[in-house]
Image (cartoon, rainbow, N blue to C red; front, side, top):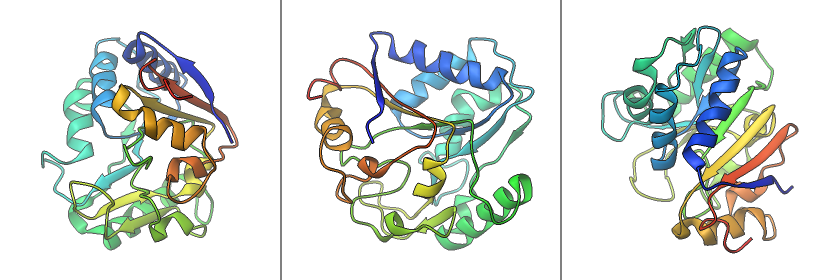
Length: 227
């Protein structure tokens, strides 16, 4: 499935606006890590959106403490969450390790959204790795084949930092009402082509997404050069 491609010369501004609109609708938003999302979060913190009805969740996390420099939560908290007032923030407890951290996040999803269901988030923001991975779903890793769990532990990530991870699974990403990939820079152009133009396969995990809802690739012209 191919996303709608939106090429923007004000990528951070446009991404921040999408998130602000979702927050003000009182949605359940999934945040991700990465440098372009970080810049987006910093801009979003300046926009004055009403987050009082919004819940924040995470696509994935490294198995480190929440104040560790490699933590996705720390990045998002420093850039955005500490500056707004969402209804709830549900962080992944990376410090528990991949297995126990995944179990606990799955319990939290079940407690909030109901047991035995695939959660349908209102907006899922994803980045794209240079190997075409998304969340912490890496090329040819066994987690790509999981269909009976919402959260998985990742013992062996496919790229640095080589620490275990926790990640949402493909069924959850595909259930999002709006799934937005945010990608910038010519160094990601090959990965963009593999993920969104080539033949889907486990060597390019992002190519395996088939969201039921709105599916958007928001990128700059450099990242889109091979599309």
